[in-house]
Length: 434
Ligand code: XUL
Ligand code: CO
Image (cartoon, rainbow, N blue to C red; front, top):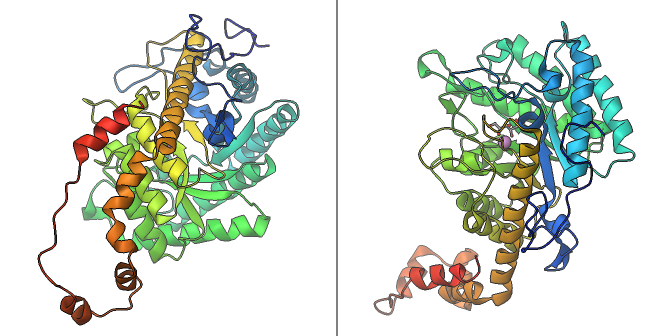
């Protein structure tokens, strides 16, 4: 027990009527939904960086949280103190997973060797704690964007020495992820983009990024890591333009560099909206392309044009995303990582509990709604009816490439019969369940 939070007992499911704000009203982890428990479907993870590292600063002011481990002191002692609270948070929330960047958990040293030694020392502590804790590692990643050396990118840096440094950092982070039994390894291209094309050779930088990712995949196989490599798309921020813009651009990139069967995607709700898409769109497209890997579950703000990383609170939005997850057979090794931060004024330790409890309940309600939509069947029936023509022998011949353009042209017998898209009927149908 760290004494950091107001309670020491695990947050439990108490049902929709519960008036205890530190209880689950919908997330009933053992409840069966479409053949799996809620816990198995949702695979929640706490994000170390937002919940344990972020100090509550913004561009106009410094830290507000004043966490004890963020105050001056021996950085490794502080990292250990932070780990104690992290594992206490995981235990209280009863979450099955957590995620971290190398520099979230252990401080950067004076040299690469010292940084790696710090990381391995904290990984030793994690390994020891994970022997008795329930929590497992959903994914690890390397922070290739905060340090000054990466200001012009990591893999896409004009200087090969920075590329090499990024390789070394990812090698260490992936090996630690492997050692801790991580189920995935994530790459978010934080500064893999540009501020101005005047100083940027776009084609050169894309080739560097393609080479880098091929090296990472080769190393995964070399060390026997069985987890999934995930790329996390984001259109901009911190750079003006990021190469991993959205699902469609990442898929094109993977195809170009021969990686589409090796790498899947980690889709973040707020990144989808920054790219001008809905979260639902990005999840549906990744599922359609066979690259749906994992979700960073959060939300943006309708008025702010930046990555506000708030906890999810819209059941309808999450329902539509989870509908595509369920229809595509689930997330496999992926999960729902709360890449979300409490607000700057939420300075009480228990605010972290309220935030996660609310997010977990929203996702649980959304899961139930999505499962009900699937079990009801009317939405799928409408979709099947809309595309029924393609299921006929004539339609499938065309799709399989067994007819020429001339043959198809000759098959026209008259004017096709337009049919209603029935959008309002379908929206009303979905609204019965959310
Ligand atoms: C940044 C972001 C990252 C990644 C991991 O917007 O989402 O935290 O999830 O590097
Ligand atoms: Co993210």
